[in-house]
Amino acid sequence: MAERAAENQPGRDDPARGMQEQSLPAAKVNEFVRLLGENQRRISLYVMGLVPNWNDAEEIVQETTVVLWQEFAKFETGTNFAAWACKVAYFRVLAWRKRKTREKLQFSSEFLETISEELAADPERREDRERRLAECVEKLPPDQQNVILLRYGEGCEIEDLAQRVGRTVAASYRLLSRIRHNLFECVGRANALENA
Image (cartoon, rainbow, N blue to C red):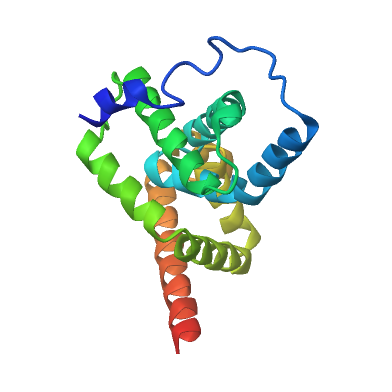
């Protein structure tokens, strides 16, 4: 159902298709750059909440930015740019899903729609959690920070990660599990302190 709705929404087509020179007044170009700069992190976090692989998420964010630029002449100044951008990103995620149908992990459209609504409902809370997580990652020993970067920043498969850090696959799984547990507890403590 959501995929059918995507057919009439900005951002549903291949962003490279129909790429044409945008002739906007300088003030409108400056407005786009300002709004995109103010909302880039929010858009990225939103997409990363919907897509399991960081590399795919980055690609979707780039496609979203292209579509936002292509459609910006239709954007009404004074309306919610972040909400509009996230809606475009949502349809880019649906397009990405169509391209990835051969992969084993697929979320239903209903699941994605629910997650999308949750992420859009409280972006400040998500940004706070992201900030706390980054602070907790900085507290990790350098070797554990490297493991997190390899797995989640570069999207390394566990076998490649194990080889790069000189561990067995089983030991790498256990290490990642311990790191995730420590990060979960650290973020929980930070939340408790802020809410106290």
